[in-house]
Each structure stands twice: as C-alpha cells, then as structure tokens.
Image (tube, rainbow, N blue to C red; front, side):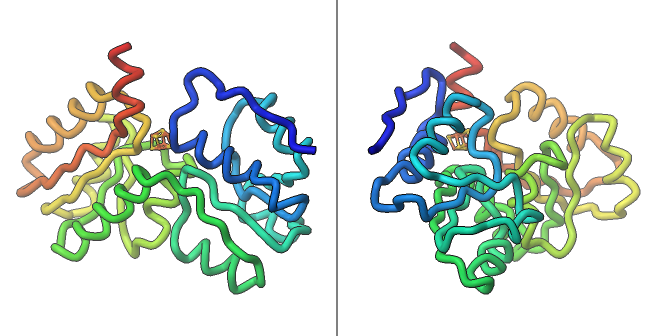
Length: 202
Ligand code: SF4
C-alpha cells in the first residue's frame, strides 16, 4: 500500500520531485536514499512506511541492503555516483536541475582557467557534491574566509554559490573579493536558486 504525502508547504520543486520519485510504487522495498533528502521527520517516516530505506551518507554504503539507490535533490559528485554503480547498485539520480547547473557552471569555469571558489557551507551535502569532482578549490562561507583566497595565491577566480544562501550575503562576499588587492579577475555566477530567492522576498 502506498502511503500518500501531502505536498509539504514550503518544499521546493527539487526536493518534492525527489520525494515523488522515491515514492514510486514500482520501487517496492528495493530503494535506499543515500543522504538526507529532507530534515522533516514526518516525510522521512512516510518514506520508511512506503518501504524506502535511508542511509545518511556514502560512509554507510556497507549498510545498503537494496539493489537500487537514489541520489537526493542536493546532488552528488560524478565520482560518488560511479562508486555506487561500481559497487553494483542501480543509481537513480534525483539531483535538482538547479544544483546540476551549479556543477556545470563551476566545471566550465575551471575549463576557462578560473580557480573555483564556492560560497557555501563546507560540510553541506550540496557543496560536497559541487566540489567533489574538482582537483582544487576553495569553499568560503564568510568575509572572514577571504584570507583563504589571499593565502591560495590564486588571482583569477570563478565563483558560484550554494543554491540556498541569502542573496545579500553572497553579494557582499563577492563585492569584498572584487575589492581585494590579491585578486585580478572575478567571474561570478550567482547560482542561488529561484525558489530560494522567492522565499527571501516573500
Ligand atoms: S536548488 Fe533550489 S529548488 Fe533545487 S533542491 Fe535546492 S533549494 Fe530546492
């Protein structure tokens, strides 16, 4: 029996689409979500009632008992997806297209010889996914972290932001980076997603 979930008020389309995919009856009890999809305990409970298993991250790969696994809306590095498929799992990717846009943007910056900088929380699953395929990068969360840029010695920066940050905060950090005497060039793409922006003006 499929347990229905009310569309939680405030759930963005990316997360809702991932929940809907996980609730697809065809999965039966053969799906494990890798990583936290939502912080809402009721949603997690409903997923479990529908037979969906959850593991908190890739460190728990040995605990996965299903053949099918799902990447959450927050995305994951290509090497993470490969690790799962190499381990024999069938990988369903519910990465939000707006997160994938950030992956694509930062990789294209690297191709153009910009040093990649992500404004975001170092330990956030989305940020880990964004930087997971990069050889070198910086994550900064605050103007206090500008010292990291100075110490890196990198002067041509490609900057993106975690999708869920405050617009003013990100613009302030980027403004300070542009003013820095240690930086020659800044290529900034503001990758805060539209649902987040809409919430901030609501
Ligand atoms: S990028 Fe925005 S829309 Fe997509 S999952 Fe994250 S918060 Fe939701």
